[in-house]
Image 1: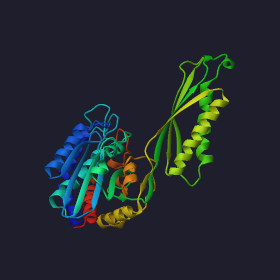
Image 2: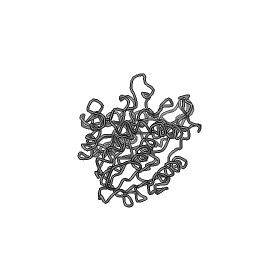
Image 3: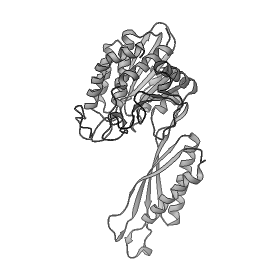
Image 4: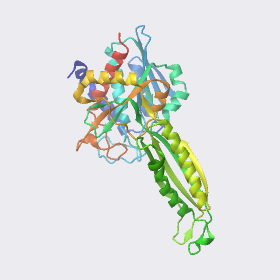
Length: 391
C-alpha cells in the first residue's frame, strides 16, 4: 500500500461517517439544501473559497496554490432518487420515498476527503476547482450550473468525475477513451382515434391496435435502420389506454426511451422513430402527436485526459487493479455536458462483485455505497490533482 493510500485510509473513518450521515438524510434533485450546506461548511473550514447556490443548490470550492496557471476541475454529484430504501441499515434513509440508491453520497464523501487532504498537505501549484453538482438524476444539474456561469467563473483546463459501479471488484478503477455512456432521449406519443363500442369496431378508429402496431414496428428501427456495429436502444416503457373490455378508447399514450453511443446514430433514431410513428398511425386512421424531449448527450472521454487519468490509476493501484479500456455503458450521465465544454474523463470505481455487500445494482432499494472506496477514491483525486498541478 502506498504512503498516500495509508494516509487516506487513516482519515477515512471521519468521511465514512459523513457519507452515512448524507445517506441518512437524502435529498432529491435541486432540493439538496442540507447536503450542499454541509459541503460548503466543510470546504470553508478547510480554507477553500466557496460559492453556494450555483445551478440552484450547487457548490464550488476553489483552492489556489503558488503561481501555476493550470486549472483543474473535479466533480461529484449530490442528489438522491425517489425510491423507498430496503437495506435495513442503521443509517438507512430517514425520508420516506427518497434514498441514495446511486452512491452520490459516496461520491461526495470521496471528494470531500480529498479536499481535506489537499488543503492540509497537498503539494500542487495552480487552481483546484471542486464542483459539487445537484440534480444529476434526470434534472440536468450540470447544465444548470453551466448556465449560471460555472466555467466562466471557474475556468478549467481539464475536468474529471468518478462513479461507483456494482459488478466490478471493489476499488478497481475502470477507464475508457471515447464514447463511454449513452445519450438519453424521451418521447411521449399520443394517439387520437375515435372511440366506440367494443362490439362495433368498424365504427371506430382504434388507437390500441395502432399502438400495438407501433410498438412492434419500433423494434425494426434498431435492427434495420442502424449499423449493426453501433449501439442503440429503443424501449417502450409504458402504454396507457382504455378502462373497460367492451369500450374502444378515444386515445392511447406511449412512453418511449431512446439511447445511443454516437451523435449521428442519435439523430437517425429520432428521425426514424418520428417517421415510423406518423406512418403507422396514419395507416390506421389515427392522428399521432409526438412530444420529443432531448435528454443527456453522449458522454465522450477525451484521449489525452483519459491517458493521463490512466497513468494516475496505474501509479496508485498498479496494473492488476486497473482496466485501461472498459466497455461502454448504455446508461446516461449529465457530466457529458461538462465534457462538451471542457476536455476531461469520467471513470468508474468498482463497488463490489458476486455476493458482496456492494454488488447490488444502483437504482435498487437494496443498494448501498461501499465505504471501502472512500479511501481509494479520495487517494485517486489527491494524486490526480498533484500530478496535474505539479508544484
